[in-house]
Length: 181
View 1 (cartoon, rainbow, N blue to C red):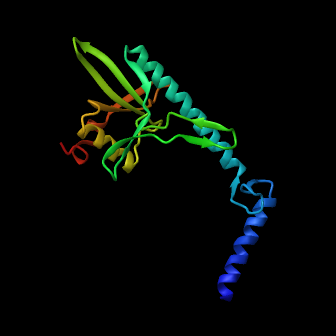
View 2 (view 1 turned 45 degrees about the horizontal axis):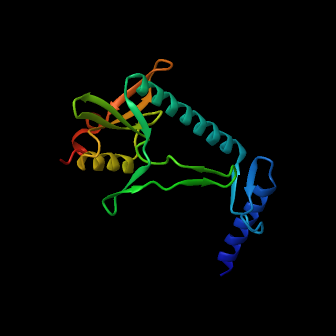
C-alpha cells in the first residue's frame, strides 16, 4: 500500500511541477479542480502548424483535381469495420476555438469524372503528405474497393519537386495483400 501511495504522490508532484512550468500548458478540466492534461508548448505549436500545412495541402490537391476536369466533393462517410457497413462520419468539436469540424470522413474526397454517356469514374482520394496509410486506413480502402463503392482509391502525396502532387493508386501500391476480390 505504501508503494502505491508513493507512486501516486510522485505522479501528482510531477503534474504539479509541469502545471507551474513555463514550457508546459496545463488544462485544468471543466470544473478547474483537477489537471486533465499537461502538454509542452513546443509540441502544441508543432501540432498546430502540421494541421495547417495538411489543410493547405488538401486544398491544393482539390484544386489540382478540379483543374484536371474532375468534380470533387468532401466525403462525409466512414467505414465501421466491426459491423461491416458505411456510416456517417462523426463531427469533431474543438472546445478551445469553439469550432465544429464537419468533413472528417475517410477518404478525404470523392472525385467524379464523366467518361461517356452514362459512365462515370468515381474515385476516392485520401490526402497524405508522406503518402503512407495506417493499417486501419488500408483496411478501409480495401473494404471500399470490395464493396464497389469506388472504382479506385488514390493516395495524394507531395512530390520531390516543389508544388508537385503525386497520385498513387491504392491497388497498385499495396497489391495482393489487400485485394481480396
